[in-house]
Image 1 (spheres, rainbow, N blue to C red):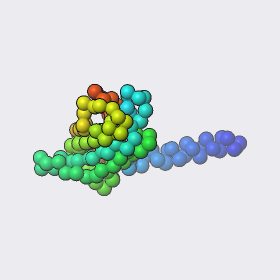
Image 2: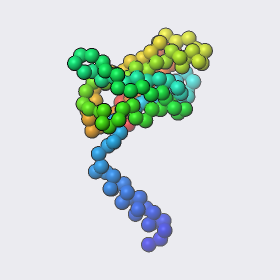
Image 3: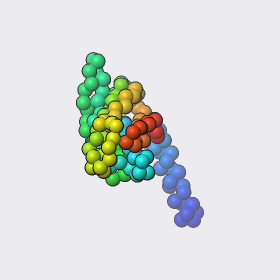
Image 4: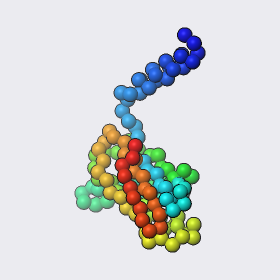
Length: 134
């Protein structure tokens, strides 16, 4: 077997071994500033879970240079429930000397344990959009 085919075989075996493994990812996010066509870095995100009709803060994180937070809560914290992501966008816009209509944005989603939820925010000073990513 050639070295090239051996690499392919090893890669396929690695993929097959991880196919049945439980997903250790929980909730992630990504912010793109659509007015600039760039990621929004250093935006604080606070994640909450609804418990007994009250929001309980679970964690705070800031987006990296690529506008991402890859894991907002640990696998141990993650359970089926309703989550709120609070994006504190005012400081981001102020740093960029841009007037914005939104001091913060909140996205609420129902999540089931065992699945990965990627919740992107497409942002501009006077509007935003979100969706369930992958």
